[in-house]
Each structure stands twice: as C-alpha cells, then as structure tokens.
Amino acid sequence: MSKSVQNNDRRRFFQDSLMAAAGVGFLQSKSASADSFNPKDSVKITNVKAVLTAPEGIRLVVVKVETSEPGLYGWGCATFTQRPKTVVTAVDEYLKPFLVGKNPDNIEDIWQSMFVSSYWRNGPVLNNAMSGVDMALWDIKGKRAGLPVYQLLGGKCRFAADLYAHASGRDFVELEDRVRRWMEKGYRHVRAQVAIEGYSTYGAPGTDRGLGHLPPNTRVYEPAAYVRTIPKMFEHLRDKVGWEIELLHDTHERVSNSQAVNLAKALEEYQLFFLEDPLPPEQVDHFRLIRQQTATPIAMGELFNNPHEWNDLISERLIDYIRVHLSQIGGLTPARKLAAFAETFGVRTAWHGPGDLSPFGRAANVALDLSCYNFGVQEQHIFNDAAHEVFPGILKIENGYEFANEAPGWGIDCDEEKAKKYPIKEDPPFDMFWGNVRRRDGTIVRP
Ligand code: CO
Image 1 (cartoon, helix red, strand yellow):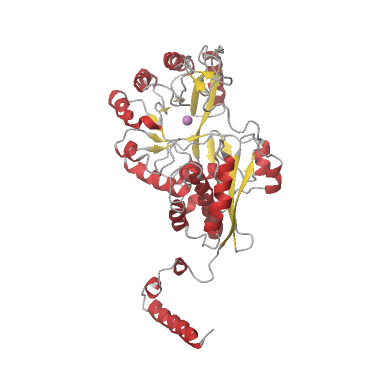
Image 2 (image 1 turned 120 degrees about the vertical axis):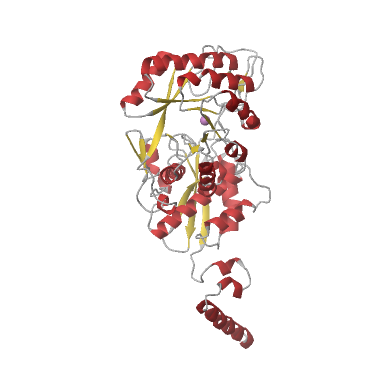
C-alpha cells in the first residue's frame, strides 16, 4: 500500500472519529456505497440455495441463506408448487450471485434491491424466490436477536391464531358430519364445500358424468348448478349445526360477475364469516357491485403477486379480509406493510395457508397473526409425520388454535438429508387440475 493511501485512510478514520464524536452521521463522511451502511465486521451472506422436497407429495421449495457466522443461517418459503423448478433457477442462478457478500441484517434494503434486480418485476417465480430469501433473513434476524420473529414485529396481541378447518362432503349430510367433527375438536371456524351433482367443483369430490367430446383430464364445471346448490348447503348446515359455528366458503372464482353478486346476496341470511374469491383477480372492479348490494363479508387476494394489487380493494373498503400467499408476494416484508395498510381501513387478515405453504411460510403467517391487531382468521393445514421429520419445530395446533414456536427466528429447521428422502415427483410435471376445468361446451374455466 502506498504511503499516500495509508495517509488518506488514517485521515478518513480520524475525520470519522471526530464526526462520530460530534454526533454527525457516519454516512456523510463517506461516499454512499452500500458498504457504508455497515460496520466493518458485519455478517455477510455466503450462500443462498433452494431445496425441493415433498414430504406430503406437495412440491415445496424452501430457501436457505447461509452467513459468514458459523452456524448462523435462515430458512424461508419460496413454494410455487405448480412450477417449483423455475423458482430453484431464480434462487440459485440469479439471487445467489446478487446476494452473496451482502449484510443479512439489512432486510428492507435487500428486499428493495432484489425487487428491481431483474428490472422486470412483480411476477410469480421471481416473487416466490424473493419470499424465500426474505423469510430466511427474518429467521436470521430473530436468531441474532435471540427472539421469535413475532417479537420483532411488536410482540403478541393475542395468545394464538384462531384457525379455520376445511370440511367437504359428497352430499349435505356427509358435509354436516365433517363440520361436526371439527366442532367436537373445539374449532370455531369451518370452511364448508360440497360436491355439485353431475359436475366437478372446487374443494369437494367431483361427480362429473364425463363428457366424451372434451379433452382427457378435463373436469367439467357448470357455474349455474354450483350457484343453485350453495345457498341450499348453508340452509342445511344452519338448520343442523346451528349458528354458533362460524362458516366460511370458497367460490374459487369460476362464476360470472352477476352470479357472484347473486350468490353473495343469497348467502347473506346464513351469516357467513366470509365468502372467498367470488370473482377472479381480473374482475376486481366488480367487487363494488357486490358491496353495494350485500353485507356478506368478502375475502380476496390469494392470487395476487404484485404488492399493489390490493390498493383499491382495501382503500375503498370493498373487501373484509385480505387473503395473500406470503410466499407469493415477496415474503414477510411486504405482508407486514399490507397488514398495517389494511388496519387503517378496517380490513382484516386471513393469510392463505393450505398445504402448498412450507412450515416456514406458516410460521411467517402466524408471526403476523399474533402481532397484527387486525388479524381475522388463519387457514389451517395439519402437517403429516413425514413433514415433521423433515422440518423439526413445526408449529403446534391445539383446540383450533395455532401457537408460535418460542425459539429464536421461526424456531423451525430443515433437515436436508431427510428432505432428500421425499423428492418431488416429476410425473405428472405439474398439477393436472389447473388449466383443465371446462364448461360443458369446452370453454376453459378460471380455476
Ligand atoms: Co382460496
């Protein structure tokens, strides 16, 4: 090193010390490089990798962020179960080289820089990959602080997350029996779905008569038959199981705009906890018409990718519950902002939580459920024994409540050797269900 460089370094060190002593910002004394954010001995990201595993047959993508501090790493959920390998490419080949060397403490800066790192943004795949990294960074921060993540978000404002369970039946009587079973286990919220005679439907067994003129694997769905059946289903349930239990239902898009309005109106007398996704995301403007005509509570948002898609729905109070898949929108960082935004407008959270969310994603849901005042309800998924083997520390469920793990970070690990015991299945290469639901005449139905 030349003498003048050494002198410059000494002078800068001396100036920094003086300015620090005088309370002058450290940044002002240096050029604004990213490194000037961080103390010299800060922890660095040394590796980022995606791991595929399917202990329940559902293809999960989880992301591990490793650091320069021995034994310090974090895990996050990047699951896009329909296209898992594309997420692996996004993580291993694109985010890893972008992130190695950065300080894992700077979650917000890393999120904002990942967000624009491909220039084109706000899509599935890239947002899934970001979600995995983001949640892993929160896990690391929790471990560094020695605190569970919900503590970093402000601590608990309830002791656990109230869950809703799924019940479905081939007919009203079987459904009633399934609802009762959850009630007997102490659940206060149950989602009810029933088969539609002669057709497939969402969330219940299909009874398609099989129409020979449609392509193989086709599931035949007719919205009118569905819309006629569901009010009768709720009439039956209220008559048999009473009014104490909170009942929910998922339309899963599939119906026309006017059918959605009619359905929401017809269900008003059965006092649902919420009616989910009566419209597809392409028809969000139509929620105004539902709102003008009925007080049936509406939940929406699991298909959103872009953290701005919910702006109008929330600020115009067109929905009651925001349903978002945390490993789809970019992780915990955008979700906690969304929750705060929704609180202002009286919209509550009901984070999407079926089996295509890994235990890390569930833990992120529950961290928000516990720390956000405007929590509404949490969708339940009960992991099987194989998932517990791969992911030690999975959150406990008791009496219809899900509890945070009190260990630092998420309190959950991934045993990479055990994960290999449950490889993802290549055949079929994706869920054949999606893109194969059609009307009787062959028209494709949004799923
Ligand atoms: Co749904």
